Length: 363
Image (cartoon, rainbow, N blue to C red; front, side):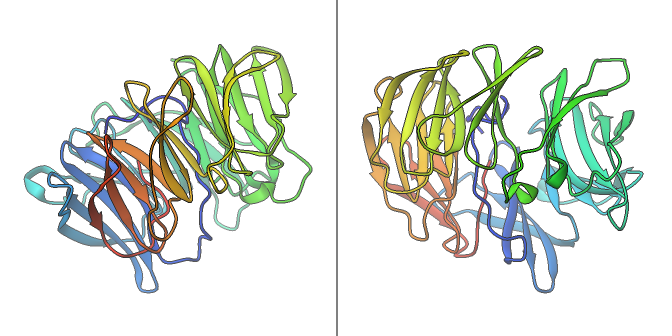
């Protein structure tokens, strides 16, 4: 995976309803191999996929699972899947899926964010009566070790996403809002504050959050940008509701629901340095490669020039591009009911497809 997804939140995605069957998570587990989690009427299935030939992806093995999310510690062949109270370790060596239990959480797991060497887990008591964050040491992914447990404020429930920034964390906690705290090494994690917009719709939103210009940026449910630097905080209205964020060469990229994209010099008074407004649909995701190349999904799939945001190429995936990620010398697009499609990064030509089925997210 050559995208900069290892950096904080380089893209955002508008997700389908949880009740829709199809693929709900995909991770890169080793060079040339991916794992995909599929939910359907009969339950869940974990697939190990050989993508060394991107024009002909091939399922090597499938196993039934009730897992809700996946994490890959270091793309070295280990895969962690959240399943009820358990983190399950899958070994992908010899093109097989081993199935021992790796870690049992104190409550049912609802979200996981994996960094190299550790994982941050959100979990919740049955009936939604309480929630906690668990920090795990996964340097030995065969035996994750609990480093700390942080109890969330009373009545916190429905944590749908967590982001581990190293020394800090963010958690999207439904009606409790966006929770921020510190994760100091060797010390007890602490909660520093919450942000809960009063506008409707916040309860199901995942946090769109990145770090640029020494500042943390988030999008609230109304599309307002919120910045935080140390103890200082403020808001910025970009002129239309924001829907996706990314960073490129120390600038902030802001995708908006009106089909426009801004390149912004971040600061307390952000300065727009480039803009385009003809992407055709709401921007659902922005992905930036290791060498600062920009891809955008807005129904269509766009490759844009990093300085001016001029069009390098445009492709029209069937089913509408919902999420995108740079992979090797290509761009993978989750195209809703038309599955995952892989495009050549230089020309925009279609290189391969996998499963004419529902796909909403790629990494």
